[in-house]
Length: 109
Image (cartoon, rainbow, N blue to C red; front, side, top):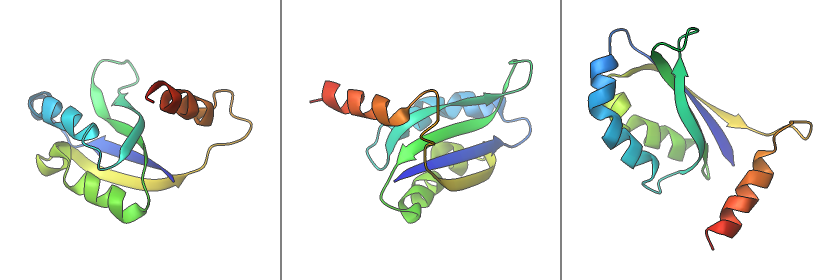
């Protein structure tokens, strides 16, 4: 199942975010959940990070919530609010994640 993880940063955490980035990035590749797409949420002018958006594949919500709780950005106080939502792609979406996932799986074989 796909899960959208929407994370909003606390105030004045740019330095902590930068210090924890490598550890956070390594966790994205840890295998606990399967990352599909992820990146920074940025201010309207693109000038600075305001959070993160992570789309993952995992068996259940508990796995995703445990993953988030143990992420360095959560532990070190970068994220002030995290929302986990089940996600189902629309058949009318102009970009199809399902197609991308199949291509990625075939490439990784």
